[in-house]
Length: 490
Image (cartoon, rainbow, N blue to C red):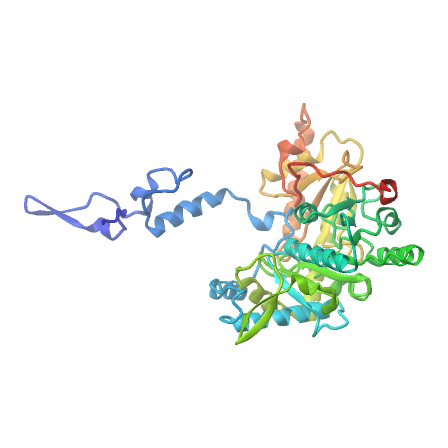
């Protein structure tokens, strides 16, 4: 069997003999003159022939130049900047499978330390003994929290179709409802409200409600929902009806912000009704993509039916994930960030992110017809700025988003959730690595975009579909049923 390889740059210097004279190979040793780059990249079926690695690398590298610049993507919640030491740790641990705890016991130890640190950060009454796990992100962590609530409800004798109550949520909760056969009772917005309010809760709860899910850092606006107020509303409901409904807090973005920048805000395990919390390490936890955390208030809050055991140093260790094999590098890097920064460093870094967001918020109202919804106030939400148009300035936010895209900025424009779908807003997420100077560059491009829209108004307004822009949401191929108050269903 012979291998059909293309010549390397060195091989192109091979010589041939013609009439007794040595002649050089006519092929160039320049990478872009090599045969592999004379044709389009494979796009359909599995390719038959090989390429040399430098050629394959160049093909993939060059195609990826069409992607946006991640640090200019203000639609994403996820980490887009890490330091050189974190990159080194990622590279050094790419081959570590986190589920193989017997082969990589120190990686397992670092995960356990992180669980204890996060539980302590969120005021678990038993930070050293409670259960928690790393996940691939907050979506998996949210589903684990939901499954635990469903299993606890069944253990208490629950029968029929379980449900959970929430406000405007990220799509992972709609997936949880559909994939695990749970009814989602998503409370529509009413009046001028942009979040689920405590007085909304009781009408949607019944004996089959497995949990209420406040979002601590709402996807649409960046605002915190009132977890303490929702807990008090459920206390009142229990006093009236006997229903003891737990809370799972979706702190995907707020879980690593409030402990440092709004420490007196009560939203976590200081509330006894909060049984579990999920968060993204790869968002405001500053870890690279692929890190999330699910933590339970106490070990008893995670039903044993969800636990499996894997080999660990001649014994066994509990595991409770939806995924099995996955890289350990993200957890290792998360631990690095925890010990590198500590509480003092996280407070300093996260406070600076908020200040950068506040600079953007203050300038937006000066340069355009914008009304702020969230101004990056750490008492009210995550480090983000969201806004809508005042009046009719002759353009819409989809058109402004489209103009900014021509300069490389990705800022989502989208409609609000149920019952306020006719209102369009924009949201900019401020992350570690986004500086005061970058805000000024963005503001200059917003001004430039406003001037262009004023000089060249659209004859037909741009739509959401035409403008594009990912806002961390998704639409089910088969729509879910609209939530109705529980009392109306009886």
